[in-house]
Amino acid sequence: MEQYLLALDQGTTSSRCIVFDREGNIRSQVNREFQQFYPQDGWVEQDPTEIWASQMGVVVETMLKMGITASQVAAIGITNQRETVVVWERESGNPICRAIVWQCRRTAEQCAKWKAEGLEPLIHEKTGLLLDPYFSASKLKWILDNVPGARSRAEKGELCFGTVDSWLIYRLTGGKVHATDPSNASRTMLFNIHTMDWDEELLSIFDIPRAMLPQVKPSSGLFGYTDQGLFGGQIPIAGVAGDQQSALFGQCCLNAGDVKNTYGTGGFLLMNTGNTPVSSKQGLLTTVGWRIGNEVSYVLEGSVFTCGAVIQWLRDGMKLFKKASETEKMANKVPDTAGVYLVPAFVGLGAPYWDAYARASIQGLTRAATANHIVRAALEAMAYQTVDVLDAMRQEAPFPIGSIRVDGGAAANNFLLQFQSDVLGIPLTRPSCVETTAKGAASLAALGVGYYSGFEEMKRTWKTDRVFAPTMGAEQRETLLRGWHKAVERSLAWAKVES
Ligand code: ADP
Image (cartoon, rainbow, N blue to C red):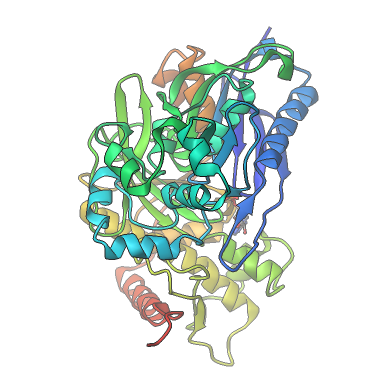
């Protein structure tokens, strides 16, 4: 009987399950959105039970749709929204409060305080991250400080902390395994990417009891088996990685110097830097890609907070079109943006600017501007943000960047990718399977149980759909980028309170 790989892709807005066959083809797929809570300005929460229930629901539905049983699943791979914090009771498995989501800015003040105390260089050196509310540590401390009884119970070992991967592993194994992988651990700001272990000094600075932390296991290999009662048979969980690292793996960017860019809600450019962590002074993050056996692959990452989300805003907020896919036609209806620039700094700007006070703007408007020009300006902005991140990466990466593999929902847009290639001046390759995040987790699991004999077998499942090559002249590129940088300049520090 044929065996398959099950990828659990637990994203920020939806839980997905995808079944892959040995050749890497998608055989079945189910997606379920779940609720987001915005209790205060800048706060974002999710219900951990709903995360689990929606994820469990799509796994069962996918298996039923395909008519497969647990014995036909070679392994489960998990990939997940990163940095989001869940705290639950070790004994019952019940969460003690809502999950605090990566986008939540409630700890901005706490982070500013730590920065003022001069902690950032130490944190950057150990974790490869910047002192920003984006990462888990300040969120976990917030829970310990604000949920009644949480700190004393955590100290007694009664509570477990985990990013979403740990939470799912715990529930899937019926509470037997409390573990994570280094790609997720490296986003908590508690993990030392050089020693590859939780860091006592950081735990003490952030006041986090070690007893509540998960065990860190290699990204590929056995984490545990699913509880017998869940799927009518035990399935090995054998691959785990945070969504962006999983996408890098799924794109088969296995060698030092390989680069991928994802155009999803946010934008994430990642370079595999091999077994050497490369430190950045330009606002890029140094993080763990994955660990397989004793081999660690490090990554240089540029995180852009708003990418495809600007298209969502134009659709839902401005009502300029009904479907995101219409934007390609609209952009192609005009020869340029008529001088319009849109800077999508709705929640500030990430790499390379890291300005929490930047705000979005539309500039250069004249009476000539139409909805088509604004849509085109939004798509071009998605490309310009990647140019800024890539420029930073070019300055710091030890490898030349010859081409980039692309994925994510908005990578379906041919206008965007052609314009991107033009303003970068390098070719882009889009694979035929754009579900690279899920594919990465499935592949880690496949290697973990020996379903794939090795990297060569995995690489054979990656196929090109289309290559976009640059056609724009250098002069035009420079003129466009000058305009973009002028527009960014005027969006910076916008929301800062004047003293
Ligand atoms: P995520 O996994 O981050 O939730 P996806 O990778 O599914 O996101 O990508 C969805 C994003 O891509 C949405 O923000 C949507 O607006 C945008 N998007 C989807 N299709 C297109 C398209 N054809 N052109 C431009 N943007 C698109």
